[in-house]
Image 1 (spheres, rainbow over the protein chains, first blue to last red):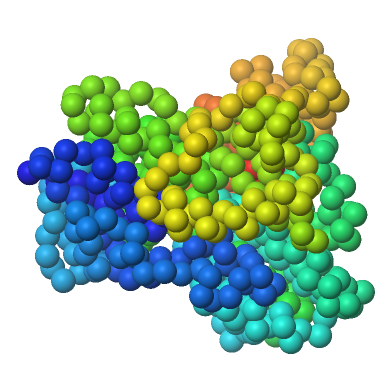
Image 2 (image 1 turned 90 degrees about the horizontal axis):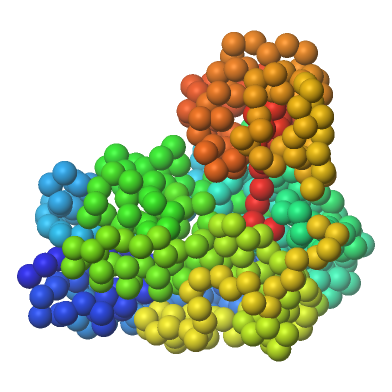
Amino acid sequence: MKKLLVLGAGSAGTMIANRMNRMLNRSEWQITIVDPDPVHYYQPGFLFMPFGIYGKKDVFEPRKKFLPSGVTFIQEAVELIEPNNNKVRLASGAMLAYDYLVIATGANIHPEETPGLAEHEWGKSIQTFYSFDGAVALTEKMRDWKGGRLVVNVVENPIKCPVAPLEFLLLADWYFTKKGMRDRVELVFATPLPGAFTKPIASKVLGDLLEKRNIIVEPDFMIERAEPDAKKIISYDEREVEYDLLVSIPLNKGADIVGKSGLGDELNFSPVDKNTFLSTRYDNIFVLGDASNAPTSKAGSVAHFAIDTWGENFMHYIQGKALKPTFDGHANCFIESGFGKGFLIDFNYNVEPLPGAYPMPVIGPFGLLKESRLNHIGKLAFRYMYWHILMRGMGLPLPPTMQMAGKRIPQAA
Amino acid sequence: MATKTICGKTVQVNDEGFMTNPSEWDRDIAVEMAKEEGIEALTPVHWKVIDFCRANAPTGKAPTVRQITSGSGLSTKELFGLFPKGPAKKVARIAGLGKPEGCV
């Protein structure tokens, strides 16, 4: 029996287990998936929790529910990957041999990397929605908050779901307006990037969105430390931003085990060929989902499109054929903007988000780079699709690579 | 797409003066771009950073501050000392690379 070993049973790992269970000849292949945590979180839902749109129960399910019976699930932590021996050592000391290894261990937040964040004010005046516990704590904080200056700060890129900080601010504008206290809330976005929008066409189309919604942007803000007692964050160039409530998106890193096994970069993301996800160092290791260093967004939609192209490619590869550079960096993200509306963006490694219609030219029904009620409904409907279609390993009737049909390049850009 | 004449060469730039074709860059351009960014003279340490960014940006994409610090061995504080107020953006412009970008 040949052995396919998958590390991590989140969005990417679960989709791979289901896909490979169907595609591989099961009389020849054994599929094993390892994850220390029995709970599968719907991470996009964390954004909605602080605003009372989703509750705790909406965002998690047991991992086992989405893993096919033909796949062995081992609920245990990994101690070390030994790529030169084609083995993985588990925390219990047990060794798992593999012919092919897929690393899908994701990315996680590390507030302890920024002085002042994860200290005595963490979970009080310093909050995050980038974890389940964080989103639960922030939900309570928002409910009782009397107003003041709310600062959203991205510590450093890359982060998971890069549009989520922006969505949080737009939803906060709506949430505090609805509560009748928007005049007592100041909303600030402190970002290490040169602005909230950095791509030329998105900047032109959406550039005044934050101004219209009265959200102040503090660009090029590279946080050095937080001063939890003085309630301010300080940048490397000594700019100070005061807050009453800091919503932090802490440093995102890949799994420690990736770094410890010598397979990571400076942030424990594992270097891959960006079109095939083959490790740059080992020809029997693939890295999918947020765990890789592929320069696309760290998002579930990307993992889905990536695995769509990777599955077929892998089937060729195990027959001794060369991998094809099939993945184009395709990402497709709803941006929730509050007041029952949203945007949709669709892009890849080479094509920035453009206006137009998706998935069908003209008809849509979703509008690209345009605010609409339907885009909001699409975003909410996605939770159903995630649990019932994607995590069951079924495909969506959408091409995995980005299509130019339906997109327009504005004249002025 | 706009162009700009710098050191007697015409190069393609975007609205904010970032070069859009990294292959049009040379070291004389870097010196001029640095002056425009308020850096009068480029020291060997400045060049160490610029060279690192050039060598590690075959696609013309600007590296992040962390990629620069871990690759060049400088601390973030030192990097801010060399390229005050937004080193990632300044180095990218001086090195003829695109502006640091997010996804939108």
